[in-house]
Length: 201
Image (cartoon, rainbow, N blue to C red; front, side, top):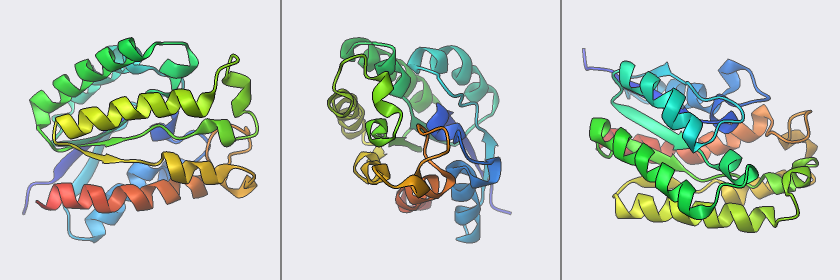
């Protein structure tokens, strides 16, 4: 029996999938789809929490990551850093701490995912504090994508497709802020082929 890939999903509300059930969360769908495609994989932990920043991830999720004996991970983090006013430099610094830690354990068996554009949701603008949300998230996403490139890691850019939530109630959860289960499935469709490629090589 081939050894199963041990998958840990790191992140915030967008990885725990606030607004969807556990079965509807994209890490669970991703794991099932990969298994069905002949990739032996198990989701061993999803320590993500709504509202968590890169610092919260370092403090609370990396210990779980370590104790889970992972061989693969996804990382989608940063939206709460931006909301809470963390500057680009500090975000970048924390991101590097996370990436260094994770890569030390699993090398390039890590897929990064960009931050979606929550400004297009009905209640998103309430969190702007007078700033341009899309602009701010784009700056953070540039950091994520440049680190991925530098480290030879795959990165899935969900920012453009997340903008399709604008004016589409079916893609937004009833809290008017988080994506719906349908939107998470759309993300998973983008994430799946990239992860499949990483795990098959």
